Image (cartoon, rainbow, N blue to C red; front, side):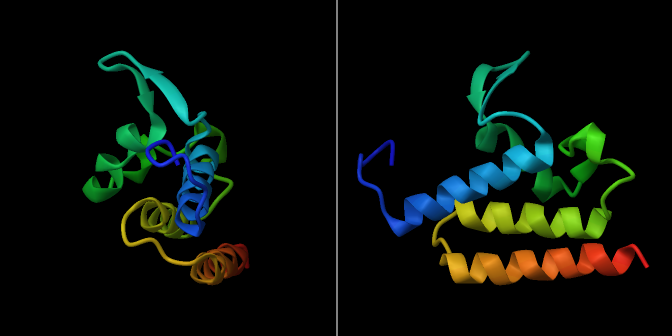
Length: 108
């Protein structure tokens, strides 16, 4: 949207991915880092899932309350939502339902 000033299904999916990252990390979309100053959350977060070190990005308040595998699944969904080509929302909803199922099963 920032580049084209036009709302599309793709920009909606991207925005939803950003919201998912905000929930996972517990930070707003615009953050301030010591090294880079103001930065968009997606620029800060994207290298971390590739490294496999989810604990570096996960909201400390969620530790011990959420299954790591289901959180990792939501990270994967959010990553997919902000990259090209973007999936449609029905695919994202299906993947989120699976993450919820994983989380629910881990509690038993």
